[in-house]
Length: 251
Image: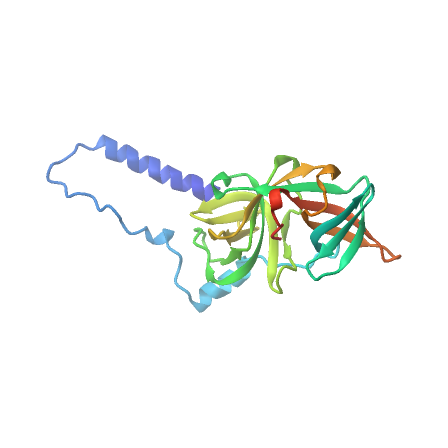
């Protein structure tokens, strides 16, 4: 955010100088598409920059408290139980309790992304630097999805950790601290490098997450469930993310 304020300050100063200078007929026409300033360009690859990127890009960690992830479609709903047919073809019974959090997932738009909003993304690290300007290079991540998260859920899953969508995927949650075209910095800590730079391609799903209740869970709906398996082998849901209007959770 400090970088953004400095950049806006430069723009304001430039406008003020331009307005204060008298126009001259002999001045050449301005270049309609000037090259970006050197400090706005992604630095060229080098061993030194790669080493800096390795040091400054967050390392995903395993979360021992992470529940089992169950992805599939609801086939049965009872008062305190749902059955989910997984993508692998198994049918699992999952208990619901009073503390189970139900989250609705609806269609979103990248136009809704702005500074300070809380977001989450599953992504994978690329072998290229982020275009967001810093004192040192950091690696860019390519998003599989982006979720715009309601303020009532702000703070959930804060941080950067390993994820099981692919063998090398991560998940990052935090607030938007910087934005460069379709690359955003997801900020989750106090230092300049406690953030994950994620590119959001135009063809990936963008969803909105909001609190809901158990009445949203119905047969035929696609869900992503975080559940703990007890010593008796039975699952109990910590949270259920439900895709509305036929949406399939991409995470």
